[in-house]
View (cartoon, rainbow, N blue to C red):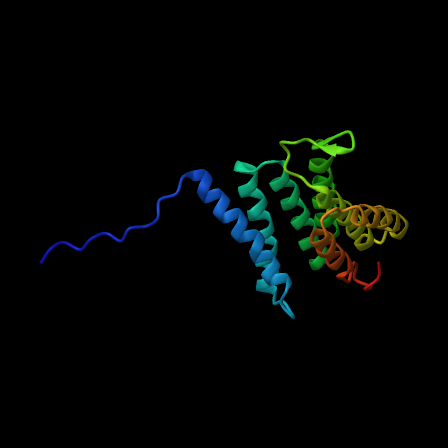
Length: 175
């Protein structure tokens, strides 16, 4: 009998593997957050997936990838009621956003778009709401709405508005 052939696994470069895992983990966050309820294991997986995606993007991603990964970390922590994680993710998201601006526009090589600014500000509004900082949250919310209204692409604006309306924003189910 001939020797068994080794099963061929797909060959990836390290960068390709990082990208595959970053995207897969980011999408897994959406899947888990879309469930009607979450077990403790789901919650653990959710936080690990968000941080895993961010880690993979930190190895090969551009500003846009890292900004959006930090936004996801903030959103996941808001969903889980973790104030510190939500605030840290929102602040890091805004740091990437601001570093990518050149005046009123994004640097061409950043990859960020108008909706990224709206989402970064939304993350700050949501994190402050979770922290019980109602006045700060209201201010960030107003700015996020303004940036949301300025999103040029109709579909992107619709997606932002749908996400913006999802709640609750804090344990009291208030904004």
